[in-house]
Image 1 (cartoon, protein in one colour):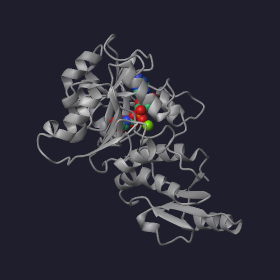
Image 2 (cartoon, rainbow, N blue to C red):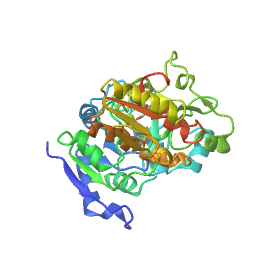
Image 3 (cartoon, protein in one colour):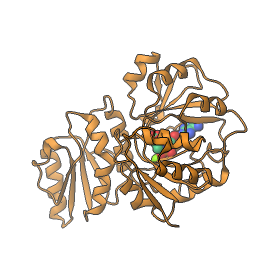
Image 4 (cartoon, rainbow, N blue to C red):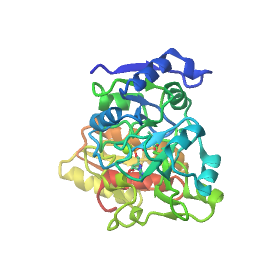
Amino acid sequence: MLTRMWKVDKDVDRLNTYPQIVEAAGILAKNEVVALPTETVYGLGGNAENDEAVAKIFAAKGRPSDNPLIIHIAGRQQLADIVAEIPEMAEKLMDAFWPGPLTIIFNKKQGKLSELATAGLSTVAVRMPGHPVALSLIEAANLPIAAPSANLSGRPSPTTAQHVHDDLDGRIAGIVDGGPTGVGVESTVVDCTGSIPVILRPGGITKELLEEVVGEISTDPALTDATQAPKSPGMKYRHYAPNAPLHLVAGDVRKIQALVDEKRAEGLKVGVMTTEENVTSYQADVIFPCGRRNQLETVAEALYDTLRAFNESDVDIIFGEIFPETGVGVAVMNRLTKASGFPII
Ligand code: TXA
Ligand code: MG
């Protein structure tokens, strides 16, 4: 399949009337799948009302069919069509954070959405993305758009159109290139079907910010206890992994350097994933900084690009620094531990 590329300037007015957006929206309406930028990561969008379109999303990514998709909407009127009811806590969260990197789980209204999109669950994940290109494309298509991250299943999520192209060229109808995304990690997923909100996946909106709006909030215990089954089906899969094994290290530069030296002495090519502050402190075969430690938002923004960059190098093993689990650091460490798959050294 020929994968079209549309470049759009996200800052122009009335984007939904732009020829590139109108063309991409027309392709979505024909139940083909198109990658689009959001403020978190690129998504692979398809008509959420149509089984054929949703099946194409799962096929292009190689995604397990028991992992439901997030439904992206451009306005509150679209929400009423797909959810059974809107709890007060969800109302407060939407007022505070939509459009933006927050996904809310609702009880589903039967009949409207493709059953494949929600993996047959009685609930549905919905978000209104805070990106002008995503919003205008959804508006122009006039459809709810199911969109997982636009990577091959298991690989780091894409934060540029080039990342999408690297994974999905020839497998999807097109890519709308709106430049690099901003937040860098996926949306926070919050379940609002119970008595208090529960964080199922940490993300762009921190727990602290959510608490300011709704008060008490809990976190799925499976996020910190590997023996529990996660409430969000996607959280049970290994994810984001670079090709070479990634070992996270709790400790200073000297501890990491000693590990690097040991592996190099065995003849291995060793990579280090560090931050701008420490980039000149190591001696290794490949050293990539991932944002600035003193500003965790920059680490989130650079995370997936850095993990992907190691795949372009020929390292045999990677050692990575860890980050404090405060603010967006919670999401960063969640993704890093999944990318690693090993206990922290
Ligand atoms: O920022 C994002 O959320 C990006 C952009 C493209 O919007 N999307 C994204 O989608 O990260 P995906 O498919 O990679 O992750 C969706 C997560 C998965 O962990 C999935 O299991 C969970 O949301 N999810 C979807 N529907 C759910 C439901 N009804 N109940 C619980 N978890 C659900
Ligand atoms: Mg994903």
